[in-house]
Length: 135
Image 1 (cartoon, rainbow, N blue to C red):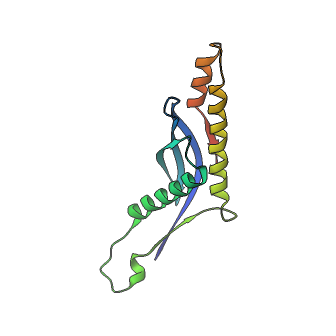
Image 2 (image 1 turned 90 degrees about the vertical axis):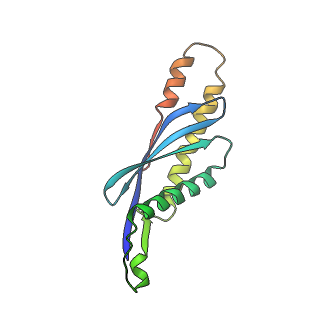
Image 3 (image 1 turned 180 degrees about the vertical axis):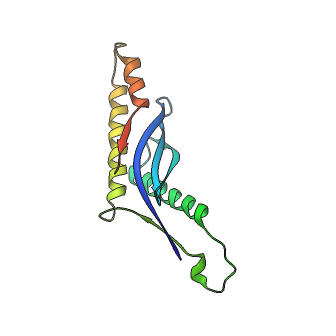
C-alpha cells in the first residue's frame, strides 16, 4: 500500500470568456514534491462548492492513475493507493479554493459593470492574469 500526498499551491486564470461566462483556470499542485498542473473550465453560473469537489476528485483520480502499480500478488492491499490532501485542518484546502473562485467571480462582475471605454482593455487584461495562492 502506497501513499501520495497532494498540496495545492496556486490558481491562475488563463482565459476569460465573458460572452459565455467561462473562466479557464490552471490549478498547480505538488504531488509528493513534484509540481503538476490541472486545467479546468469554470462556468460562472456553476455552484462553487460542487466545482471544488469535482476538481479535487479529478485531481485525485489522475494521481491514482499516474501512480498505480500493478503487481501480480495475492495481497489485495498491493493495489491500494492512498491519495491524501496535505492540509492542517480537514476541509481547509477546499475552503481556500472556493474563496479564491468567489473572488474571481466578484472581479468578473465588476468588469461587467464598466460602462466607459476608459481602462476597459487594461481591466480585461488584468482578469487574465488573476492568481491566488492557496498554500
